[in-house]
Length: 75
Image 1 (cartoon, rainbow, N blue to C red):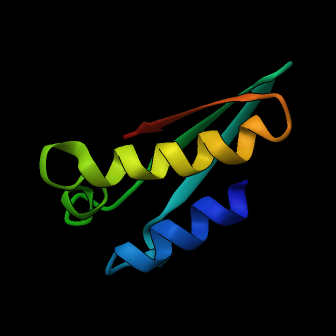
Image 2: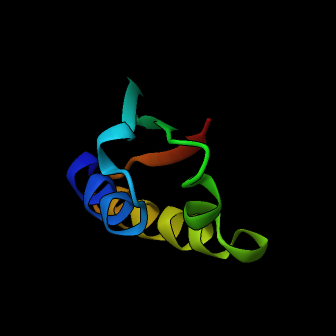
């Protein structure tokens, strides 16, 4: 799932080298912590949070196949 997230985020941002993804897994819960350049935050979050909501939906769909839950935090 981290590869999927990196692909999506890398396609959205202008500075993909500044993207850092932390992963914490606790049982059936996976928590991604996304660190971006401040200029790229708006592109990832989108208008009224629509883009990040779509990203979370894709991650949740992929996690449901493995009977897991996914959370995405943006810093």
